[in-house]
Length: 108
Image 1: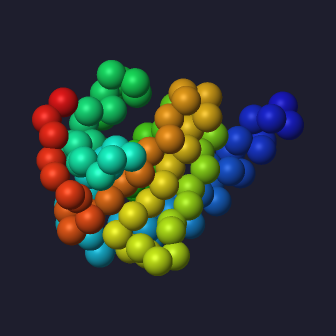
Image 2: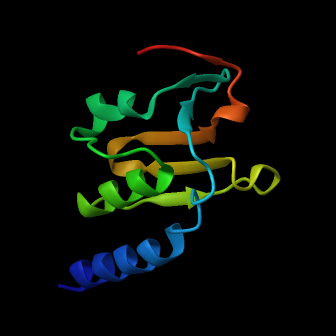
């Protein structure tokens, strides 16, 4: 019971706190550790249904709805252009970036 209340409180707080992350950026991608960028929908193989996921906010809300804990970090020097999202239970460590930060694009 306490765990479900903690989860609900976490979801509500993150829903409120997450809103400003990607509100001004129009196009988001996933960045590999080498700087290549991929479309967000390449996460389908790890997450499943990714309908209407176009921003870090969309992804975070989806993961929370699926019942997973999420850790979010915005690098201060890239604020507004990058968001790191961790979903430990799925072993996902993702860097969302705007198009401006992508070195090159790769299809997956």
